[in-house]
Length: 365
Image (cartoon, rainbow, N blue to C red; front, top):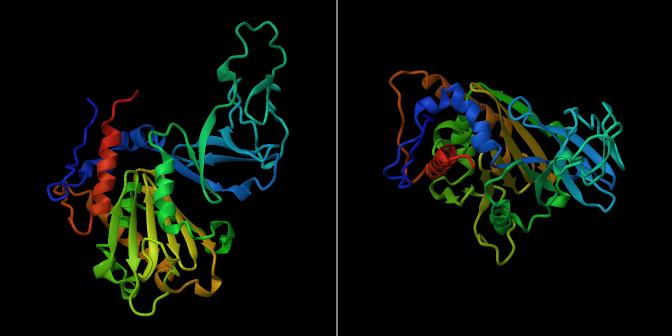
């Protein structure tokens, strides 16, 4: 019988996911089909295919989902995302980014249009009931937040509602003007379960204990968490003269000293907005005990970079790694089963655990 989880919706009564969740290889594998395939993933920005007739092959969450995908901007300047696998024998179709008007598999010559539609296959005149719908390339759902693109494999929730939550606060920002800085971006390897990394991100409870510099910047007493269906938002308010957003009139937080908006999107995406720009963190499972976290930096106002709540991100990340890896080691104990939530400070973690339980318990269609 499959493992079932229960997270009481009343946080004042609820306990966390059991320690066994983080130690069970079968559960780690099941998360692919039960959660990741049924949610959304950030795949990059639209400048990957800057002009019509450009395509960009990539692998979604390599070493975990390892799904070959193909982003294309067609001749009509429309963006689409398809499977990068030929429907004949499974060969990869595109190997490098480039200009294309048709997709032709180099294995046996099967040809597809820019819309992923099957067009031609040599030596198939005798084949009956051919072509079928399944001979077209599978098309993935695609959404955007400004230039940022999100793909859904078999998504079980409407991503527009998530984007609307984000636009309510950061819609005034000219995301198209944010410049990706590769030299300021890097990957971190964390020796822990991917969900433990998310657990840590989803609460500011640890800030006074782990992040002294950040605690000196943010007003811990006013730190807030807002819960939505498939995302949540942590708002960091500034102490003293720390860099804050210049919020327009009519903004929900107009008049407040907002130093950072920390958005988490189920199950593994973080979008951290600062007065200087945006830090995207994508949590990528590698194994049950190892996670890669991609930090991608987009700068808008260089004069504010490395100031305020968005300063010393590398140091903050190292501090987070230290405590998360400590929890990973602690979970080896035979005597730790589960914990309780702080109703005031751990609403985000409770929300995350509740979503995991709901998705893992859902019957497959």
